[in-house]
Image (cartoon, rainbow, N blue to C red; front, side):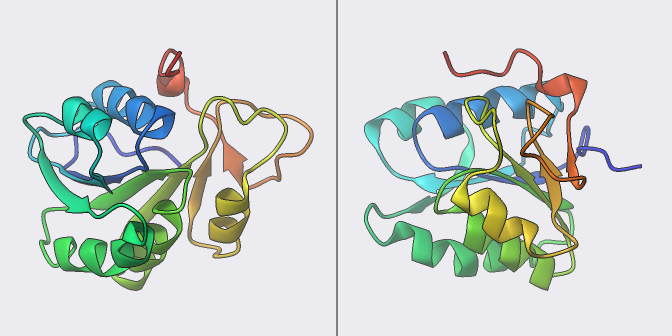
Amino acid sequence: MVALPRSARLVLVASPGRRLVELARLAEALDARPDSAWVSIRTPESESVLAGRSVAWLPAGPGAARCGPVVARLLTDPDLTALVGTGGAVAVPAVLAALTAGREAHFVETSDRTRGPSAAGRLVAAHPRTRLWTHHLGPGWGPRWHRDIRMDGVRAD
């Protein structure tokens, strides 16, 4: 059975904005360990959301391109057991880095994606080992997409 990791030390990756807010709420719902590693682009909002957490900051602009090597470096720590990333430009290289390192890679679409995956979701879905998650199942979502009840209530309204 496919499941989102629970009570684990994770690498959590999201672009700033609603993606990061939703991932922070999902991390709480998953009971992610407090020593999990976060990766995001540095903005005033992301600094606020991730205050007090261990963060590898990416620069704005070409930050997404640097995400893969940053995640690969983090995953040299064997205690970081899986990656959970949300939609956005940083998620694609992060998922690929985790899969290359032999780790579980979970891609979670944001709650506002109701009719099918985003471009990032379609890209990471091309790799058969990517575990795919959505808040909404139905037409437009392929058979590899799953929903987890712990995702309820993690919307960034």
